[in-house]
Length: 72
Image 1 (tube, rainbow, N blue to C red):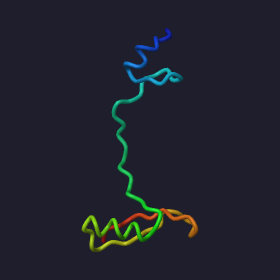
Image 2: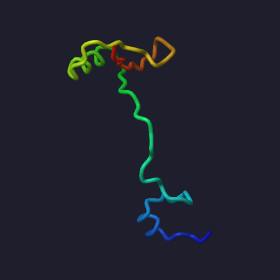
Image 3: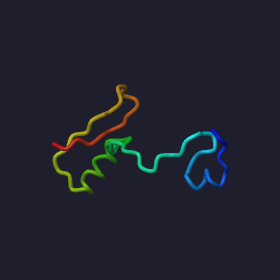
Image 4: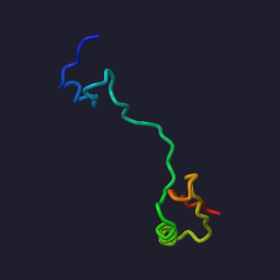
């Protein structure tokens, strides 16, 4: 494979250490909105107009929290 010149690499959006171009559109699943504290999560849910919701901790440990809002 021939070496691609730097100007062409920039044009196609390729990183300098990779042999292929970056994909323009990554079809990726939307991730849930998460919060570090319950107070912030409740405040955000109220500002969005969500009345019935449940807070779920995505992490296993109780010390470290990553809270997700689940609509009921």
